[in-house]
Image (tube, rainbow, N blue to C red; front, side, top):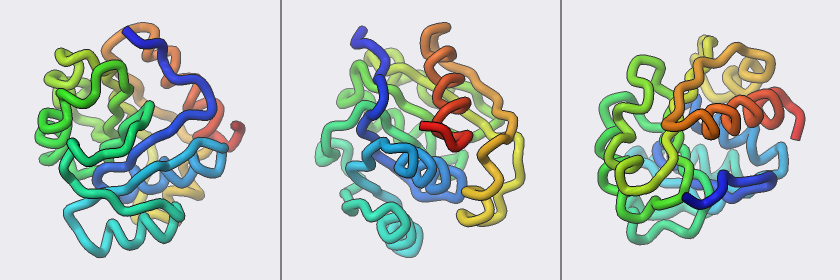
Amino acid sequence: MRPLPSSPFRFLLVGAGRVGSAVAALLSSAGHTVVGVASRSPASVARAVALLDAPRMDLDPGAWPDADVVLIGAGDGAIDGIASAAASGLPGRVVVHFAGAFGVAPLRRAVDAGAVGCALHPVQACPDVDTAIARLPGSAWGVTCSSPEAEGWASELIRGALDGDP
């Protein structure tokens, strides 16, 4: 297994929902580099591209730029499909989703293909992206990962970049 990414790292946002877009903005503010944004919704991708000053990318995982981390900010029902479609291109990468109900189960195909899976769920109401950006720093998070090392990495990420400290 490739080592977990150190700071700063390069990341993709696939699915530009409220929490995923807010996390991407906080990571970008902390010095990490967003290398692309994709979403089924033209309005969501346009909003995230503008917010993150990032390039739009195709939803086809074969066209994704290289990144250390893939954030899946899509709705609960789309996580498994995105992770499964991208599984062959993710060995050694960290794949993160933000749905609180599932743990790493929707990432199983990606993990089986060599990715590191993390489910990070903020214990916070996020009615829109701007409110999420304001509320996420200092919030409690549920963390479930495919390995103890990944749980440590994710916890450090939350205590650092997502709490406002690089």
